[in-house]
Image 1: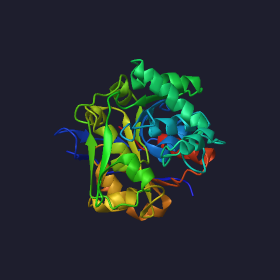
Image 2: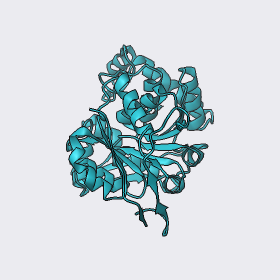
Image 3: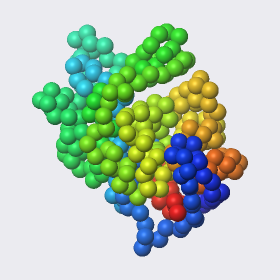
Image 4: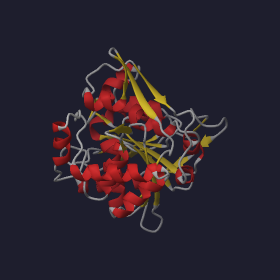
Length: 344
């Protein structure tokens, strides 16, 4: 089944936009002559990495702005899981079955650390470990994370521009019945089994956008909010000073892809967190979070019955298969969202 497009009725005063702003939209079928090329993705996690891969395969001039609030220091090394997942995926190195790490990985160093008494709850493969060693050395030498990331992606042959949302340290903290946990302790160490009572983003008020981040949003033809967890991946990006405002003010077409399909999350604790924080676990619930921030919502075929309700929020809607199984599925979804309704 091919994608279907549902145009939103023109309206003024959308939530999150300056008073008097008018959203005027028209249905456009994008052809090779006027296809948009400058695409910026706001991303975190596996879903964000896979959509970025699809957009890269589609030949866009791609920038990926990545969450850093999952970053953690372990064994004296600075680990940036979301940056690494995006980088490995774009480099063709990702372990697609697990959704993280490097394909064909070995674990000699981790096993040796375990024998030496180190706690090895956070799995680090040998080649992945090399990334963290190099990153940490360069950070300690004074290089900002954005420069280090550019060096790593270049060395691995990544064509896209991968930017940490900030060079400053931000940490997602998870409030649970067991107390406040660091994100990796909650997500990996405890396998996100704890009920989430609330979230905090330590350091985000002081965090500044990394060089190029705001320009990537304001200068793009299309900005895509990836099908990443809205609270664990997207909010720590939007919460960095100026990023949300840049998204509101950009002239780019703004698209979001729902990470909820058929009332459930494809991966991770998004459904449980949505429920805990008082939001509907559905593509409509996600659309409500992004009302006023995006012009087009991409939802799965399983959620076609929600299209009119999403449209009522002032968004255009594309209904298509959003489950990205492999490279072909990722590129198909990327081309679908690039050829959907555009801002007029």
